[in-house]
Image (cartoon, rainbow, N blue to C red):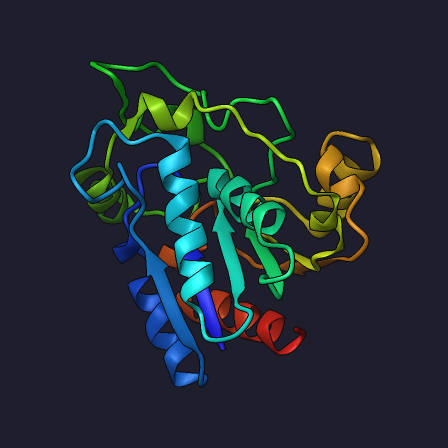
Length: 228
């Protein structure tokens, strides 16, 4: 099965290399995406450009793919379900939740010269980065791609209620499935509160399991793919 892999902020498609290798060994066809503005050298990319890249990958798949979004890119995966509900088999959302209609995509940190650079580890100290040692942190910093303002300040637009019918698997890294359920039930994640089929998968990692637990993350994604 085609499994589209969409990394979060600052991540190019290469962040999925180890996961992709494991998925191929499990009989799947991983498709890591390097998003416009996040590895292709474009500082003028917009959220619409990233959505278009994801939709192009969905359309190119020979059959309905599993679309995997990580962190902020959970919203990109959700937008794929909104724009192509009949073409997406299932979503796997890793370490994040989709934004609602009218919200900004990822306007979280300060911009510098029109881009949002990685802000350092301060905002991520604790459960997010507990499994990243000093060497892994240095490698992450060296590879981090500043994200264009046109992406992070882009406004999310959702229109097709059929997105709520696309099955969702929430992969919970730095928080537990119980916490995720609590947030959804409390109305903190309005998009998923309306989803008709949400499953939960736990993984013992920080916010970037593709770096620290690639084999286990691949196994969970393979299970999600079989569930389609």
